[in-house]
Amino acid sequence: MPYDDLRSFLDTLDKEGQLLRVSEEVLPEPDLAAAANAAGRIGEGAPALWFDNVKGFTGARIALNVHGSWANHALALGLPKHTPVKEQVAEFARRWDAFPVPPERREDAPWRANTQEGDDVDLFSVLPLFRLNDGDGGFYLDKAAVVSRDPEDPGSFGKQNVGTYRLEVVGRDRLAIQPVPVHDVALHLRKAEERGEDLPIAITLGNDPVMAIVAGMPMGYDQSEYEMAGALRGAPAPIATAPLTGFDVPWGSEVVIEGVVEGRKRQIEGPFGEFTGHYSGGRRMPVIRVDRISYRTRPVFESLYLGMPWTECDYLVGPNTCVPLLKQLRAEFPEVQAVNAMYTHGLLAIISTRKRYGGFAKAVAMRAMTTPHGLGYITTVIVVDEDVDPFDLPQVMWAVSAKVNPSGDVLVMPNLPVVELAPAAQPAGITSKMIIDATTPVAPDVRGNFSTPAKDLPETRQWVTRIQNLMAARG
Image (cartoon, rainbow, N blue to C red):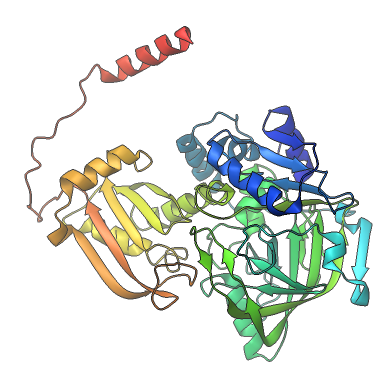
């Protein structure tokens, strides 16, 4: 049964032993972020965290690390919590093929219970804000689903974008947003500013677990995140109409913020501890004027800790980065077997593929770098043979160790685009990109001595099962 809101998912996490309720009083800083940071160091079974006794906040209810383990990620997809990550990615890819599944429009959205408008708008009175890292330039909303429309085609449902972008609170009714140039909201804003217009926007907080996943997924410009959410849920995604903008927003959100990105206005935003494990500097970024806030009674404030991987961010955007790259590559190269792009939101991608001919693996890698996600993120691609599991790092490192001749198998291409947040970029937004071809050469490439590989013994597979059964019986 898919989850229509965050609260029903938290109930499931609680029943499955994947929600830790912290009852004693804690400080908003540093305790909340430090606890979420610590959850990322526990490992694959880490729970979501619930706080409702935070000093200085009256009635605040805060959820952290909601997607912050493979167990929680599996439950978000309706899978058993012990589902291995490779199987989660495979199931994610299988459900992708059901796209598109049209959403279901509902009335009486729970976030309509309370409203602030105009001069009454005060983000600080609705949201229990706290810094995530001690070097952050302010309070951030970093797990929101931001909805915008193409100003040149506002009636297009597919071109309506739902994305996750960092938002700094810079006033009671102001937010600064960082629109990465390769993302759809940046294209929408550019079109609006060229027309001399503001860009209407809706920001939704505390969403159902699948909506949080698709909002960070690299999809085609005219592909609807709501229709993808339906495919991943196995049922239509519930949506409602935002009262001020008329945009389609998740029905089950805790908070819906509406306003406009003010055309041609910029304000310093940042620094912020990012998914790269580094702080990004302060930059002049667009400003959102908040005109209306709608929210559930006693809303649950969900936030996401970012910092040195792994954190919740890495679990959240792992499979939803791997699978789009896999599907986009397979559409042109059916030889591609699997893609592992879970490391630092796909700045590194590992691809396994069969080869048609010599040099084929390098061509696949170059294509990966020109996908919608690859343009702004992928800086390094490692390509391995079809019998190497890209999710098994010892296998990948063996391939790199044994099959790479740097003089012909490592390509470095200068002056290509990357997100400005990439700390190695110089200048910001420009980097060199690298391909490591760790595949076995095939004709007409006849380099190396790979004609007599050692293979597993025929009886190995059955012995794997025997040993696993013996270990399970012992424990």
